[in-house]
Image 1 (tube, rainbow, N blue to C red):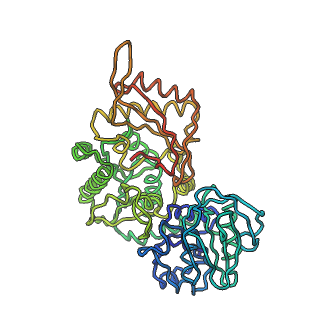
Image 2 (cartoon, rainbow, N blue to C red):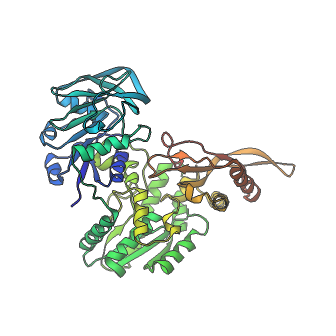
Image 3 (cartoon, rainbow, N blue to C red):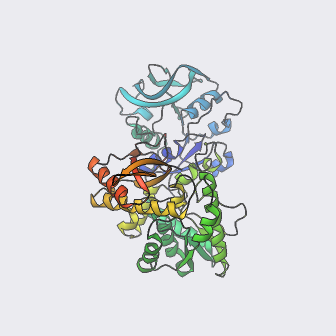
Length: 512
């Protein structure tokens, strides 16, 4: 049994990143709502608990509270930002609005080098994001670190194994943040680094066999690494009782439908049903411009198609989806926590209230890079493992505004050119994700001495590890120039190409 760290979500957009950092250190982490019942926490039996940050002030009426009983369990606790403040308030300390608000990088001076700051230098750059700060420590707590504007940047009660940090050690902007987390895991919680994805595969195969029983299972497959890896994993568990359905939702990329069928049937020998629902999807998307509405329509129609085909297969009880942790955090609160919704995802946000099939989501608690590692362990080819992420709603959310056959034609032709040139220059594997976006505006251009009034195409390319944060890729100017020239010259309907240089956050990777 692997040691576990429980992360209680108070609403931080960094909550998933905390979990990711812990797993990098080979310790299993799980995220639950801040108000998880105490008896459930006892059942989980974590080696340590991390209280995440959050957008609230501890004195707001609607602010999430901390159950005092949690602090009496004898389990080591690390509070981060809001998590630190609510712990301090619950224990009788005081929190107040800061005289000077801290956002971004701040030089932090370490006053105590034991436990979480063991083997750390005298000062490091920390990443702050807070308007409140600690005014008075609870009984038996001591100062561990400070900044120019925050007198209590880190605190501890070593006897009770309680620690708090005002900054965010989980983000890359904090120097040695991973070492601080490591010190908490191994020096304070005495965890053993035993989390291995190979063990995860074995556990999932056992669980899936038990859950599926003797029933047949349907798997939604798109050709991407998430759904394809899920299909291969389920296939190992139940073999031919897995029936894969590939839905052509009408918003796939050029030639994608034929390519996916070939890979699934010839390389993986999967039972594959091809459902061409192009007409029904495009009919329901007609006139729709709101991105959330597009996602809901596609999600609902996707499940309807599955229900239709499920009726043709006897003894079907489960539907497999390749839902990932980031899908969940960006769609709804993390497992019921207070995190603000950013956008709904096709896998988790568009399901009808009464779905006829139950879900199997083997990767719901994994990140994209972890799924890619599982794909490698399952012996899948690099063409699948390294494939750039493609959203469930497909090109519908890369066409800003209404989705039409003509706009799909324009975007598909442009996107093929973009990918071919990126691959030609050996940049594909160095980029996390790249794609074209068709904008809902036209600009004046000149082609062959004639005035044109055609569409604008945006090119997006980012570098990332897990998709939770991302920086724009600095593609060489000559490559960008080649992409622009070919798209404008060869794609009828585009006369201008722009490059997106936004990072995540504050932008998201997809435009919608």
